[in-house]
Image (cartoon, rainbow, N blue to C red):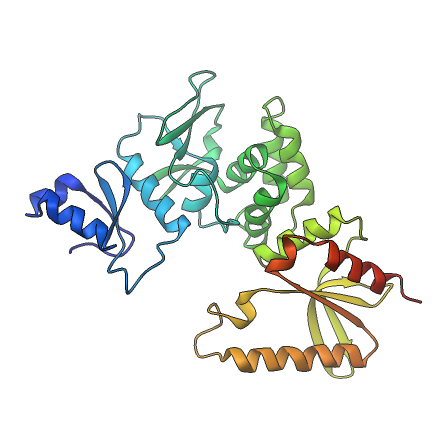
Length: 309
């Protein structure tokens, strides 16, 4: 089949190429095509080669399919804009199949099975072109997410946008000020105040919030610990107590390792690093993705380490 993995193809195009509806049903059944809306499919590839399309990939395809039918003046926004901007999201996110769009007008907001249409002022510098689409700027997108999502979900793309220099604190502050009277703006202001580009992953972003909600002292992020001629950078650092906090995500040990890297060697190197930190008298507290669902036990361990004599 023509088209690359992740490409959107229309039913009419496929019929014109000689496919029948029966064949299209078979391709969907076999996982080669996945429907993103009536009459539009994402090209997945054979399921045995690519069994997991991914929520973000699917939603991007949904956006591309919907963009061809949007009325003039429609701007991709909110979660849909975050996907187009390749901002990381704490998945799964919802709604995965409804495209988020904003029009520069006061009224007319509505929802349909395939579209969430927002009505709100859009300043010229808040609309940019990305891959042929009109999309809200990164700053406006982050603030819109702050207005519409929980702090935990909105924090992941906000931290990433600052970390990758896709936006600045001043740009976020301007977006907040422009929406001073919009619903959810107070929540967006809290998001912007808490966002920190030093968090290097979604897990670290969620960990920061879990630490704050547990009432623990604010840690320093990405601190460099020196001993002799060695330097180690740690995720979270409490200087007064000499406590190191480390979030262990699959980036370090799993399928997201650099090409050629061996997970076993990475685990061993991390153990050597931790032993070296303990050898200079530091306490090391580690946690994983699973711990973020119930952070209380980790918070208790951190609290004991922070209050040790």
